Length: 233
DNA sequence: CCATTAACGACTA
DNA sequence: TAGTCGTTAATGG
Image (cartoon, rainbow, N blue to C red; front, side, top):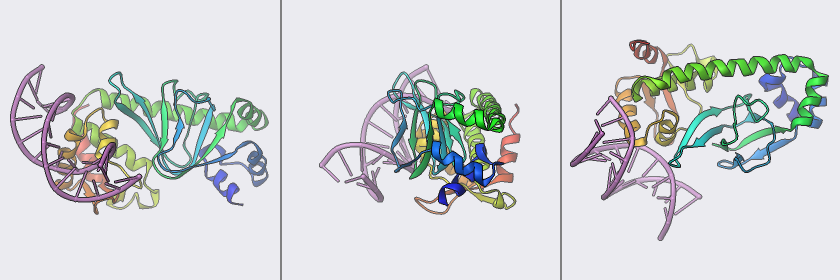
């Protein structure tokens, strides 16, 4: 029962009937990972496709100097893997940021599923192209602009990604994810000493809000967007 | 404007 | 206790 509700929540599998979801259970093993555990590293056996059922997964690479460069954070319903190749190249790491449930599918299983349900291939293509678009947009923003702009853009992205759309109408939306300055810096190609003053400035500008230590950020979307659109592109 | 380096108190495994 | 995190400050590009 639990499994079915989980599967139905996944982007890749919505639109399928209950019976079809039941069949998928046989080829979609569930992996429960505790916080901070490595899901993918360059030295692991390639599993082709991973689907995040719950929790958060951080994807990152190592620079030549050995620093972690976070490329993306995935939440429930998102997928990544070797076959998709829109995520996870050979030198990619994936680590859980909280206790997570992850579905692993290898080549044979994926081929089998897709051959039985061609609709999945279409859905899959949609996800890949959406991902591609996102990366292109991200690239454009990260290439130019100050760390402040990159942070604003990142926060906007995260707000879209990790906010329940029920509260998207409100002035303040809550980022349902734990973020350290370290991670924000790693995602904007910066360092935490630079991020700290900027975050504090955004708080004083009324764009960001932090309920307390170890608590999630809230974002004033309108103010963030105006602050973002002030910048010429 | 921003990275680097250093350093310090608080917190956590 | 050792490592991480947020923060400040000096310096140099």
